[in-house]
Amino acid sequence: MGMTGNLTGLAAADLIQLNCVDQKIARLQIKHENQTAEIFFSGGQIVHAVSGGQKGEEVIYQVLGWSEGDFSLDNDIKSSEITIQRSWPSLLLEGARRLDENELNQTLVKIDHEPESKEIKMAQKFEEILAELAGEVTGFRGSFLVGIDGINLASKFIGDLDPELASAQMAMLLKLVSGSTDKLGAGNLEDNLTTTEKAYILMRFLPGKQYFLGISAERKSGNLGNMRLMSKLYTDRLAKAMPH
Image 1 (cartoon, rainbow, N blue to C red):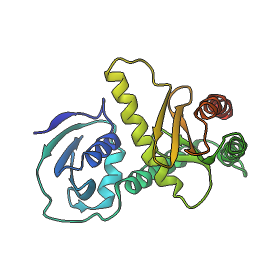
Image 2: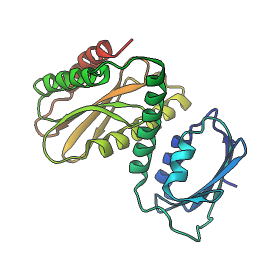
Image 3: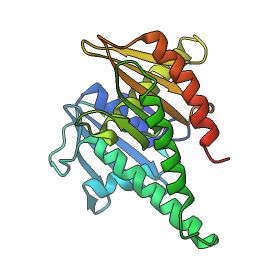
Image 4: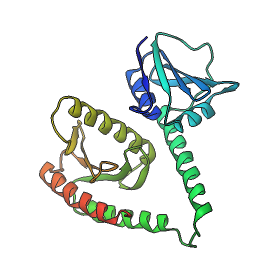
């Protein structure tokens, strides 16, 4: 058995991300109240999920809503079926969207909904701030305001890019780095810099660590000092624009 535990200390979405990143053949079993779900992994993807008489993607969306339960991970157990073709970042994004939609629907039952949503106004404000940031960063390629769950709140970028997929991947990377620094006793993570052949990617938490700002700049024309300064200034601005 590879690992056992409960969802109180580790969310289902985190378990799925970790297993996909490991790219092992494995079976994750989660027990929640009187329900049991099995999720099978192979080659860095989810290939099959089953719970009771239900199979496929809907099982994943159901499990993502479980906040309590026990889990066990067994390595080298192959699935006899392939019922899921969708990539794991896309599955987690769709699951998070459904959870947010369900929470919003429950809230709307209790309150009167204004014709112009506060969420729309807030998203527009975020986009305005990121548009200003684009003019401040040398060699700017893109910027993203992302929840730690991987949901993209706003983005501004140059060229062809899937902002939702990029946001999910950045959130996964930042959580892994943050978790590692915590285990090493290195103190709070201020920012994370990834340097590639062509670009710099800098990620910085907003206060509270529920959201972060990601900035990408050309390596040839970008300036790390400029990026770090702008990340500090604009995380403060974005934090002030958040609802309280």
